[in-house]
Image (tube, rainbow, N blue to C red; front, side):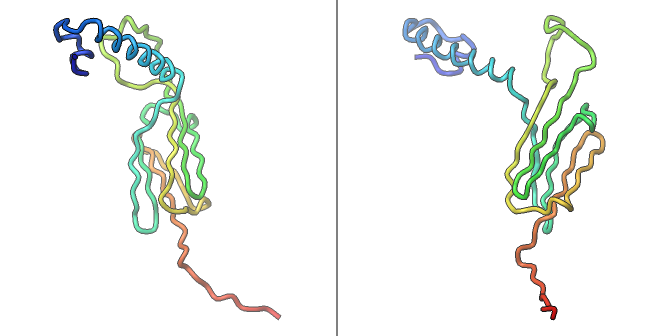
Length: 149
């Protein structure tokens, strides 16, 4: 039986051809359904999320996206970043030699490791780097209430 790499590249000999044909047919059907759903769905952003003592910082590259094309929604425990990167020129697929840049809509939802203060959160963008600064809620913070009479 061929290895996955051999099936992928088609480099191995044709022994056990019948068995390979059946498994390749099933794999081809799965790839077609996955690729068609991929084209219809949003791209996913790569993100860095880290803790900065009193804040959670989220960084992602949004180069080529206008700020008005970004939609950032936050709750106390989740951040969702959505947007659209539009290609300025219409170039047919036949004219490309190689294409890796993602054009179209994208989204990413991140479950946060701690609750954040929504009102004090902010987003900045500089040179294509989007930085979300999300202050954590201090659950240990206490204050004394005075009873009014």
